[in-house]
Image 1: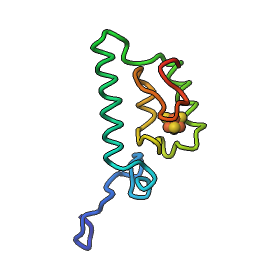
Image 2: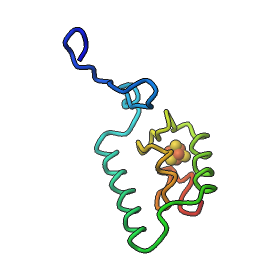
Image 3: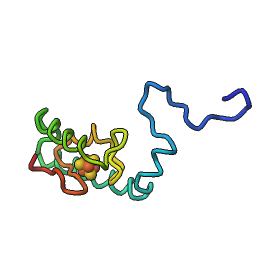
Length: 106
Ligand code: SF4
């Protein structure tokens, strides 16, 4: 709680890459982000249940991340198209770029 009795909205320590209100305004709406998260989560689980690998190799993860880093849709390590935290998303086999810049083949 602050000295003036209010509860600060952004309570993240500075060294943590937190999501602030300014950052959220460029992201998809909460409903769309939830829908994207459910879709990716469902793909990851069904892929794993099907006996397929869950995580990609380091080389694939780095190749995907390099594409994201060169993409104007990436802001503060999040994709403004899907709202995902890309450092995490690129590691999972059953995910893809919403704009088709990378997919299961890389
Ligand atoms: S997932 Fe696709 S659209 Fe999003 S930042 Fe990466 S390359 Fe860009």
